[in-house]
Length: 275
Image (cartoon, rainbow, N blue to C red; front, top):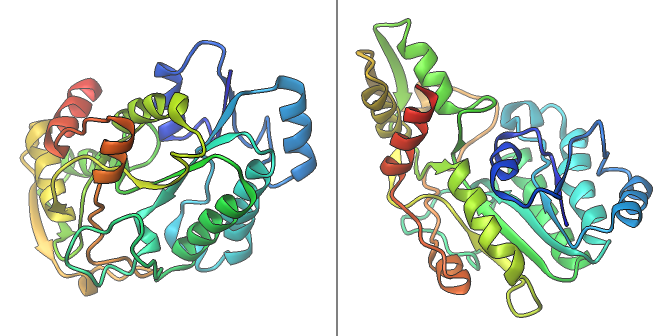
C-alpha cells in the first residue's frame, strides 16, 4: 500500500490512474504534512509501504512574499515524511539551479537557486536526504497535464480568444507530461533500496524554449493564434527563473530501466486527450 501526499495536484491526479487500487491519496485536508504528529499518527494507522510526496508550495512568484509558508510546506513537510523512515519518492525542481550553464544539469551538479521557491525546494531535498532512509528525489521541470493550472492549458485558453500571445524565447528547458512522470514513479517504487537512494532527474526528452513550447501547443490544438518571441526582461516577474534548466536523465534511465519519449510526442497525446 502506497501513500500519495498532495494528491489533488497534476501529478497526484495522474498517479491515481496508474498506482494500485489500495493506494491512499491525501491532500492538506486529509493530512497536514507540516504537522509531524499528524504524519506519524497517519502512518501508524494505515501502515503504507512507501510514500510519494507531491505536496509543495509551487507558486514561484508568491513565494517571494511568503517565504515562511514556502519553507513550511517545501522543507518541514518533506522532513516530517522522511523521518518516518519509509521508502520515499520526493518531487523537486529544476529551479534548484541558476541556469547559468549550457549543458544539461546532472543530479550531482552544484545547485544555486535564484528564488525563494528554488531555495526552499533545495533545502527540502537536503533535509529529506538527511532525515530519511531510502529516499529517491526526482527533480522535474515544466510540468503540465489536463488538470490544474499549467502552461499548456493557459496557452490553449489564450489561443482560443486572441490573435497573438507573447512568450519568452530565452528560457530553455524541457516540458514534462505529468502522466509520463507518474508512469516512471510506478516503475521506481518497487526498486527503491539503499543502493538506489539518491537524486534523479526526469523530464521528457529533447530541448525547447517556452516560445517553442507555446507554438507546438497552438499547432497541436489547431489554433491559429500567433506566438511572438520576447525577451525575459520584457515579461518581468517577481522571482527570477533559470535561463537554461535542461536536466540530464541518464541516471534515472539506467538505474530504473526507464524509457523517456520526446516532449512533442507527449504533448500531442495530452492535447488529444484534452480535445
